[in-house]
Length: 132
Image (tube, rainbow, N blue to C red; front, side, top):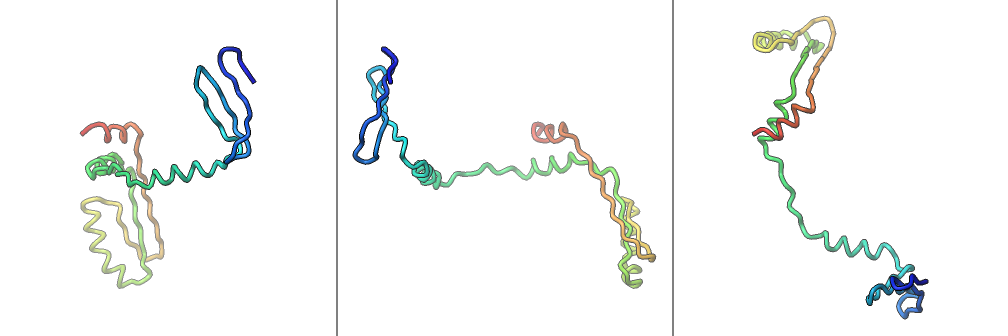
């Protein structure tokens, strides 16, 4: 096959492979082996990639800033352990938490309920990465 003055392609016999394609363009020759296994080239790439690459570690400050961008909209805990002694021991702890944060309840009726509503917007996450 030939494009006058630009390129010329021909199929030739090869000693290692059965056939090869010779492409001549502007005084330069290129050789392609169409029957060559594709997997051989991949193994060469794997050998080069065995060199250990250092990962960029995310600083703890950025992680904390992203976590601070989340807002807790609703929090509610209502627990019954099934043992009245354990419930009695948890009652002062839950009342202490209620004094500062709220949403902690203990019951003696067998109900178990946990509600957590967390909200965030993508702009808050982006701001936490950009702003120091």
